Amino acid sequence: MNPLTHPELFMELANLQEKDVVNIKGTLETPQILLNKNDGTMKFAGRSLPENPKLFYAPFKNWLAVYVENPKPYTHVTFMFDYINTTSSKMVMELIDIFKKVEERNGRLIIDWYYQQDDEDMLESGEDFEQVTGSEFNYHSYP
Image 1 (cartoon, rainbow, N blue to C red):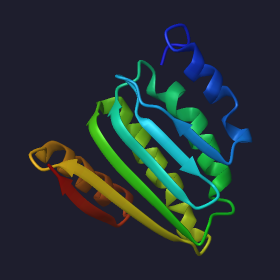
Image 2: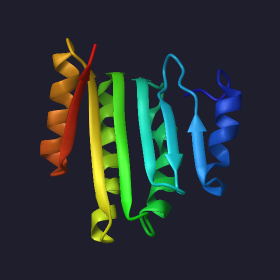
Image 3: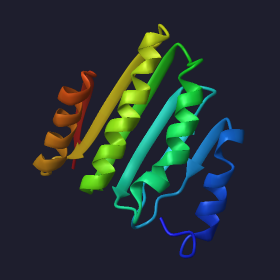
Image 4: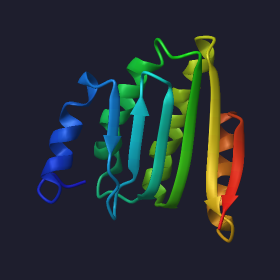
């Protein structure tokens, strides 16, 4: 994410911690992100290949770190990526590690991984995330 090419997104990310509901529209380089403290639903969808994934995902990781300290009884996470580059994959892994803390707080964590029917790579990415993080995923294909 380059603040000069996406100034409105940069400003929105700067004030993330103050919000109970975060709804960031996706771009050609960044995913749609929905985070809702009120009902425990989280969604990441679209393409993830920001110029600087660490910079882009940092505000969301910080927001989630606060959320998992006092999560809802059920936290439902949906991943529906069309494409994730290698550096974004590391950030997604870190997000999943944060989400796992919901279970440490006696909350229930549900992770749904969506992938296009013919996209074996995206299915394998979900399986890799599941194996490495030790989280349980539900897989859903769509046309």
